[in-house]
Image (cartoon, rainbow, N blue to C red; front, side, top):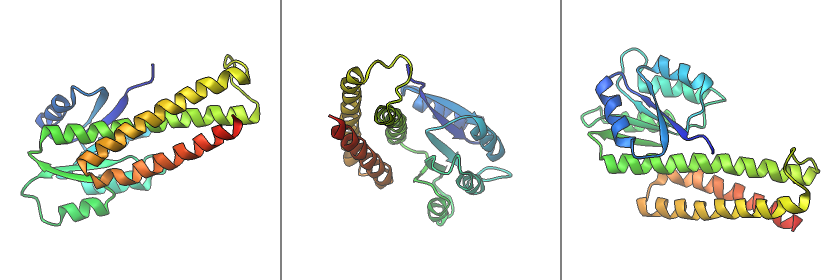
Amino acid sequence: MPDRAKILLVDDREENLIALEAILSSLDLVPVRARSGEEALKALLNTEFALILLDVRMPGMDGFETAAHIKRRERTRNIPIIFLTVVDSAPDYAFRGYAAGAVDYLTKPFDPWVLRAKVSVFAELYNMNKRLAEQGSLLRDRLSGELPPGAGDHASVLPELSRRLTAVEDELARVRELARKSQDPALTVPLTDLTDRLSHLRAGFDALS
């Protein structure tokens, strides 16, 4: 069974972390807490995350500075960040958030349904990327004639790979429909990237069939 996607929750207030965990409790993911920007950066050293929910207003290293550090690191620069802040924040906060590399920006109190929907889609995109990488590795092994131990012979691998690719294509179609209904521009780039990668993988597989 694949590992569940992990979501990093960054907020200096305990009650806000509890509220976020409660909102996300119905989703099949693992929330990880960080009470400061420094703690968040430490968590990112050894754990792979699908998404970061990052509070803007924190003492010491605020959300913007934390995001800047995340985006400078090769290992973490592509992790999506959603900024969270109170509704009466300075009017330039949204602009600064996007400039710092955030894919989205939500003000508190936010709609739990909206937050849950956004997190769910980004978690699914993360899981699809993982599965797509696995299928790409299997296809490369097939092309090079170096199948992993226990994978069976080439003839038996092709139907299984085809089934897996079809499953990912079906899932991508479902996520694309969710993105269309949500009209969320933050999903355009990751969905386009996934679509291109899956198309190339399918073309490589078709060339073998």
